[in-house]
Image (cartoon, rainbow, N blue to C red):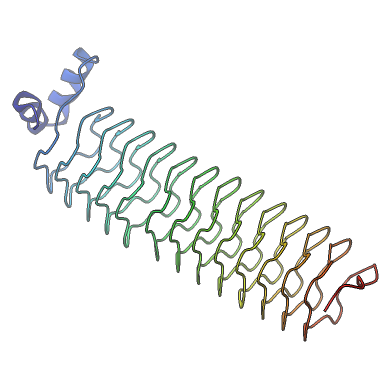
Length: 295
């Protein structure tokens, strides 16, 4: 339960709260289980505060400093967290449905099991954030920074990731079904066994990405850069790879049945045991004969 004196100080306003925190920097504010719904806490210093199971429904937290705050099972649904600072915060199993986190800082934040339905994370910084197994389907992550994030087994189906940065992220077996990844940056991203079926990856940068055993059927990778990508045993049936850069990519044992490779650059690509049944190969740059073991 929240300490009565801490809650009373918070309710006195931003100035009194700032003065108290400045004079008592070693004290961790305890606001756990407090009802702070619809309160305007914009710009408040709530860093390292204990807000476990607090109710912040529809609260105004614009630019609020929540660095290292304990926010497990907190209710932040419909809250305005635009430009809020949540670096290293604990948000496991937090309720964030319909919250606005546009431009928020969430570096090294733990979001396992958080409810992020319909949340806006546009231009948010989620570097190294832990989102393992989290349901974030349909979420707006346009231009968000997810560099080094842990997204293993996360559900990002139908998510908007246009121009997002997922470099060095771990997306092992992540679900990107029908996600918008056009112009996304996926340099050295681990996408082993990921589901990108029907995803839009037009112009995406996937240099040296690991897409081994990934499902990419009917996805759009036109004009994408897949140089040196690992696509061994990947499912690429009816995938659009028109104009894609696949130089030195490993496509061994990949299934490219009915794929569109028109104008693609396959120079020095590994096509050992690759299935190319009915694939469109006109204007494709191979610069080497097809291997004997090719279908």
